[in-house]
Length: 593
Image 1 (cartoon, rainbow, N blue to C red):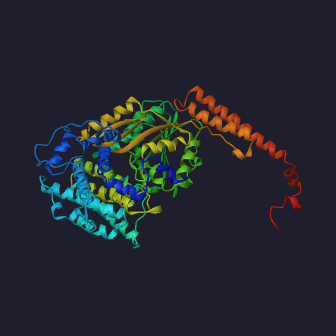
Image 2: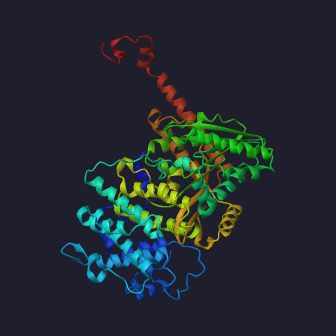
Image 3: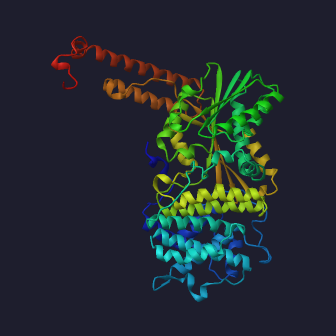
């Protein structure tokens, strides 16, 4: 399977690097990009007034219609329409990015002897901002200038703004200073790679951290789960979807593709405690440290005992996911199976063979429900400048969330930013080819991919939506967290920027042994292919309907007929029958003596 499948529909533009750089240099495209991600019009009263106060021109009004078409809907937040009385109150992260972006556009349109106007004596300060905001705008400006030069492979030109950015950046400062610290380091690594310098990197797991799975059980991950809204929203919604689909089963088998602390399964145990479940079985699978998974199982076993719930915990340890197989799980005929994939599929985008192997095996297991939670961003573009801009906007929102929800001196915040997000930024921006394993794609791409394996998306229930809103409300900064119900799924974001998505799926594919088309008569082969297409269409709305069942029954019958036809062709072949009895004759030789 080619990785190209994950690059479809992520951009309406050609990915030619030079063209994309020119587009980002263009005022309209640049401001449209910021507006579409931030989910607000560039010409909003609040932003226009602030730009006027700092001496910048707001975007021209003729672009507002295009902005409206591109922007993502978001829930209004309290205070969105209120202008700050003075600049004693700091600019938000998104406002700093917009001011820096506009400044970059203005200065990049004029170059003196090949040198950016970034260093023009009249371009070094912006009136009307407090000193911290002015420094943050300047940091973003220099970062954009450095990335622009790196994208054009003008590495000598990139060195000066990059060095300036690194001087102003800080791992313990404002969100902008922290963000710039990791992005400037990634640009530096990118330059070193392009110039042929030896780079020593630590292998990551695709999630952006080199001790990724261990992170799931340490205090840093638990702190982020408790203090940031995204993980709880995704998990409570996903668990509610699973409970609804397995509640009526006597024996329930839950397959977790990347178990961490396992805290989400305690909610399932509580939800099933008053049902008729005879036994709950959880299988943790993946390349995580086996000791961590076993410790997680011990904690879950204790919790199940407190609920008087019959419980089994099993571990399937795989060094590589291409060894994944349905035979590893010993599925019992009377078990109701559910699969939970939390930020796992993305780690295999750089390993398409593993991803395809996992999905084919899951299709053969035919779970009652599969819950998929993924990062809602496109970090898989072949264009460097596209990846850089998407990553900058995405991580800007995440660092802003950390600023709102965790203290600057919080030790766990430092670990998350450095070990988790910092490694992700380094890999997206600084790595190339097979070493670039952090390759997030958006929900629209996952939807097309999953349908290839007979998966049909099912709508999240009103109860799931209620769980999501309830989780958001309990956070002090919940008004900054966006819930967008995208089709049948949910996208959670921060101040208009999408962060993660969660969807639920049923598998409509039957466990059918379909012979290759070339091995059966053309007419019968065509009927098999046509019946499969008809079955997928019949099951798209209701995968448990009678029409769906009948359609797959027809596929099975035609497939069996094709198999019989193939067998008859073999029996009718006189040479094949002759060679069975006379393998040494010249006509039957397959190699020379």
